[in-house]
Each structure stands twice: as C-alpha cells, then as structure tokens.
Amino acid sequence: MTQQAVTHGRWSSRLTYILAATGAAVGLGNIWKFPYIMGENGGGAFVLVYLLCILFIGIPIMMSEVIIGKFGRQTPARSAVLMSEASGGGKGWAVVGWSGVLAGYLILSFYVVIAGWALAYTWYGFNGVFEGRDPAQIGELFTGLNASPGPLMAWSAVIILGTVLVVGKGVRAGLERAVNWMMPALLVLLIVMVIYAARRGDFMAAFDFMFNADFSALSWNGVLIALGHSFFTLSLASGIMTMYGAYLPEQTSVVKTSIWIALMDTMVAMLAGLAIYPIVFANGLEPGAGPGLIFQTLPIAFGSMPLGQLFGGLFFLMLVVAAFTSAIALIESSVAWLVEKRGMSRMGAAFTAGFGIWSLSLLTVFSVTGAPWATVSLWSDISITLFDLLDYITANIMLPLGGLMIAIFTGYRVRKEITCREIGSVKSIYAIWRISVRYVAPIAITLVFLQLIGVLGL
Ligand code: PFF
Ligand code: NA
Image 1 (cartoon, protein in one colour):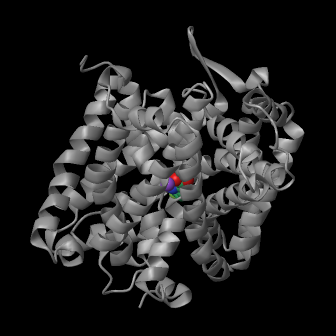
Image 2: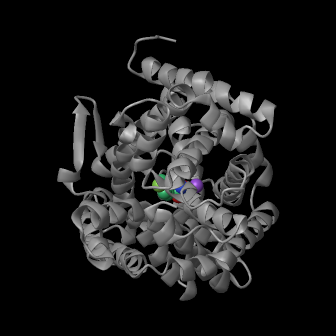
C-alpha cells in the first residue's frame, strides 16, 4: 500500500465516495452560476450544448481523472507521473496535476465571495428581511450588499475561516456525515421551490426558455462558456477527482459512480433553473441579469410564500453548505502540497492557503463594489472586471485546456491494458470512453478554441 493510502485510508464504501464527490461537484456552479450564464447566453441552445458537453466530454474525462488517482493512489501530480512511467513515459505529465492546483486556487478566490453573498442572504432570510418587498426592493437589497467592501470582506472571511478550520483540523469525516443529510435537504428545498415557482410563476415561459433550442441566440463564446461550465460544475481538471479516486476501493466501478455523480449534478442545475426562471418571467425581470440573478429572484418568492422566512433562511443555508463542501475540496490540494513539499503542519498550511485566498478574494470584492481599478480594459472597446476575468480564465480557458491534456494523456499515452483494467468491464462502454478521450473531447475543445481566436471563421 502506498504512503497516502496508509495515512488517509480508503473510502469506507461506494456511497461515502459518491456523497463526497457529489458534495464537491454540487455547489454554487449549479445554483448560482448555471442559471445566470444560461440566461446570458439565450437559454435552450446553451442548455443543449451544455448537456452534450457533460455527456461526451465531462463524464469521460471524469472517468480519466478517477482512474489516474486510483492507479497511483498519490497526489494528482504524482499519480499522473506513476501512470506515465508504467506506460514507458516520462515525468512531464505531472503538469496534468499541477495546472489543476493553480486553477482550483484561483477559482476559490471568487468562490468564497459568492458564498459570502449566500451567507448574508441566509441571515436576511431567517430575519424576515425579504418579507413584503417588491421585486425592485429585492433588487435594492442586493445592490445595498455590494455598496461597500467591508461587509463583503467580512462575509467571505467567515467562509474562508470555516474552510480553513475544517481542513486544518482534518475533520472532514465529521463534515461528510453532516453533508449526508444536508445534500438531500437541499434537493428537497429545490423541489419545493420548483413547485412554488410552477404554481405562482410563469412556468411555461421558463420551460420554453430552457428547453426550446434557438441557435441564433448562442454565440461561439457561449459555446465555450457551456464547455467550460461542464468542467467547472463537475469539478474537473482541478485535481479533485484524481484526489478522490486515490481513495476509491479497488472493486468500485469508476464508470457507474462517475455517471451517477454527473447525473446528480445535472439534476440540481436543472432544478435550479426551473425554480428561478418562472419567477424571472412572471416579474418581468431580465434573464441576462448576471451574477446577481439568484439573489434578485428567489427572495421575491420567499417574501410572499407561506413560511417564506423559514424556507428562505434554510434555502440559503443549504446553498452555503453546498458551497462549503466544494470550497473544502478546492483548498485541499494546496494544503496537501504545503504539507508535503514545505513540511508545514496541516493547520499552518490551511491558514497559509486561506490567507492567500483572502488576499486574492479582494480582487472580486472590489470588482462587485465597482472600484475603478478593478475594471480593466482588454481592448479599446472591451472592459471587464477582474472578477469576470478570473472566472473566464479559470472556467473557460484553464479547465478546458487541463481537460484536453487529461484526455490526451489517458487516451494516447497511458497503455491500453491499464485503462482497460479500470473501466473495461463492459466492452461497449470502454469503446465509447476511448473514442471520447481520443477524438471527441480533443477535437471539440480544439475546434472551439480555434474558432474563438478567429482561425476557423465558422
Ligand atoms: N463543482 C463546483 C460547483 O459546481 O460549484 C465548483 C468547483 C469545485 C470547481 C471544486 C472546481 C473544483 F475543483
Ligand atoms: Na456543480
């Protein structure tokens, strides 16, 4: 048994693994990000492309990542190197692991600020702040929260501190037990919201918007955003799934568990869309409202529904929990690196990583408060906030490129016997996986990039 397997043990069961991996996958990406980027990119066609990316690119690459971890049973970079060496290759594939650590770190810097919004809204919800407010006043609440940096810094600091303490103390096991019932609770609350939205909102308009694919509404940049989001939402190319795979029991099926995780993640995203858009359309709000969408819509429902104070508080609390389990996964790889390479204690490493995240998070805080220095102009006619830039570079560039490397690594570099041993029990599934990582994923990712830099001119 390797060092890591000895010190960290294996998942006690397939279910524990699925819950932990789903906990990392389901988060702000599903409930906060998916609905608003769908709205910004025209709805149905975006959803369709997103679903295709999950199915033919995301799931196969998730399997690739898990088998790298399961093969090496080490940190992501080490596992990739071991797998490469076992196939007669060199150490260079460690890059597959390292690029993920960097992407995860940058993602966390804005993730904590959004989680801070959710925490503020938990407070508002339980205190009945949404009650009796009309849509305009709900909008003002959000604007008010973002008026000055102080409160935002405080809310996100609470999130960071919680993450640091949990990871530093190594009490993830306890947390995962709590998550066992909180994730199902989040699902139930989402379903309650969808039912409420179906009865009181404009459900038909929402359904039509989400599932009627109008390709004239989708740009190539929108296609890249759908592709990038399929990586973001499944926590791919960030070392997470490799790390989790390292603890996977020998007999557990990589194929079944990956499909299951992707299914749950997709279901939560769809439910979030179906809860939010009926409210958007019934109140004449803008689908392309941007990152504040969920905070400007759901509170309208909480403010007018029976038991809205309780439901509102609980809903945002569950959102915080979902964000929290993802944040823990995101910080874990940097902490593991500081412990292993720098010989720090776990707590010291967690605080060091946390302080770095906090400093970086200020870029996002000042972006949302509208500080002039936090808006940069890329070309003479395009200027964007540092938050948007960080989000774009990580989700839409670093993750797809990382995924491309993982697909090529496991599709071409790793010997077929090795991949076949892990996912080859059903021949047809193995064939589909191999076609996906050798052809579909690399070609699709490359085409989208070439089109966007203007080489193809489609
Ligand atoms: N998958 C998470 C979400 O959808 O909110 C975000 C995320 C977590 C991305 C962990 C990357 C990661 F490594
Ligand atoms: Na997700």
